[in-house]
Image (cartoon, rainbow, N blue to C red; front, side):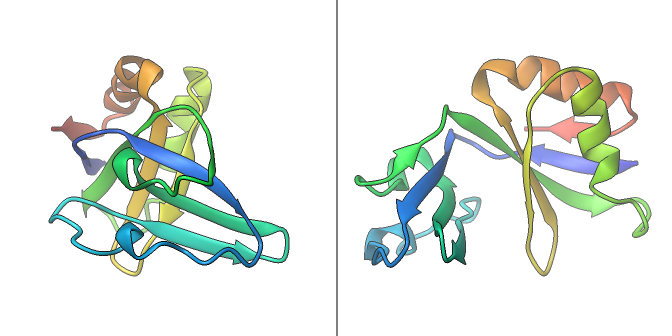
Length: 127
């Protein structure tokens, strides 16, 4: 179904108060595998980033691991094809998409169970 690569290192899911100025370090010097996403709402700012880039003033959730869809076998495959097997395995997930691909975060402590569930569903997980 989908080719998925596990990105190195841990990721943080962060919450900042509305109107917070994001630190420059959040986006400067990203490596080839790093990904940062920011969502603004009237209630606050959500940031997903490598843990070592998390803003100091942010409220953080538990450590996450990030999986990137690298090559869909069929462009009609949806995120449900990733989330459903994780839900069946009782593994929490956070997803986000860019113009080019989809990303999926699973708790670091459940990475083994999460990748196994994805593989049982027919996905190829590397990294």
